[in-house]
Structure formats: C-alpha cells, structure tokens
Amino acid sequence: MIRIGHGYDVHRLVEGRKLILGGVDIPHDLGLLGHSDADVLLHALCDAMLGAAALGDIGKLFPDTDESFKDADSTVLLRKVNLLLGRHGYRVSNVDATVLAQAPKLSPYISRMRQNIANILGLDVSRVSVKATTEEGLGFTGEKLGIAAHAVCLIESAD
Image 1 (tube, rainbow, N blue to C red):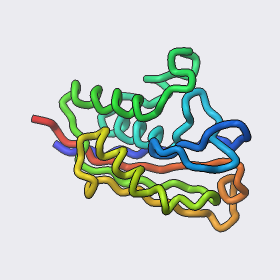
Image 2: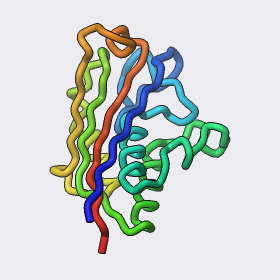
Image 3: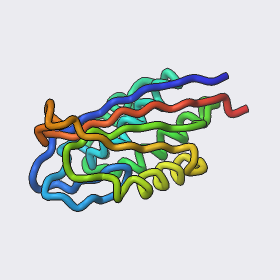
C-alpha cells in the first residue's frame, strides 16, 4: 500500500535568531521565529509524513505549549516522526520539497539539506528533492517577512 502526504509550514523572519533550513545553519542577518529552531523545511516534511499516515500534525505531536520542545532541533523531531511511521508499519519512499524565500539564496545549501534528510530517513539521496524559489517580491516571503516550505512524501507499507 502506498500513501501520499502534503505538509506546509511558515515562520516569521526576525533578528537575533539563527536561520536553519533542512538542518543546515545558513549565514543570514535574520532567522526564523518559533518555539523550536523553526526549520520550516523539516516541519513541512514532518507534516507531510504524518499526514500520509493519518497521524495528525507536528503541532499535535510536538506542541508549542510543551517546554521540552523549546528550541528543539528539528532534525530530532524528523527522526521521531520517522520512528513513529515505522511503528505504524510505514516507511518513506521519497520526498519532494520546496522552500519559498526571497533571501538568502539557498542553492549553495541544497545538497547538504538533501543529504541531511536522506540520512535521517534512511534513504538514498536520489529519493530526496529539495528546491528553493523566490516569489518575485510578492507576498510575505517576497517582502522578506518570512520563509515558507511545502513538502510531499510518498510512504509505503514496510512489510
């Protein structure tokens, strides 16, 4: 059996925070505001995985009201979601994600993001796609107020 899931996340850009996307610390004068490290790429991927298995969403699993997730490393959260899928009899087959950011340019970091995700999910990097795009100055991402990400993943029965 195969199932597909979609995830979306967005966080505001602010001063005084690190910019972490796909588990990569990206040099930038602004970072993403959130309860955890606010890695929108990994959060969208977690939601895509959880959605595919009909297991809720990242906010339900790791609520921002729980202080144990304060400043949490989203690579750890993704690992936990992957283990949860395994306990429910699923494994991720492939991932496709898009980050929407006007700045900074993300192309120098994409291969590291892909490799991080592949390592966490136990996939060959050829099964992980990460893309980045601007919105040509339009909307909150285009105005550099925030960064968003969409992710889809295909999961299959592990047996």
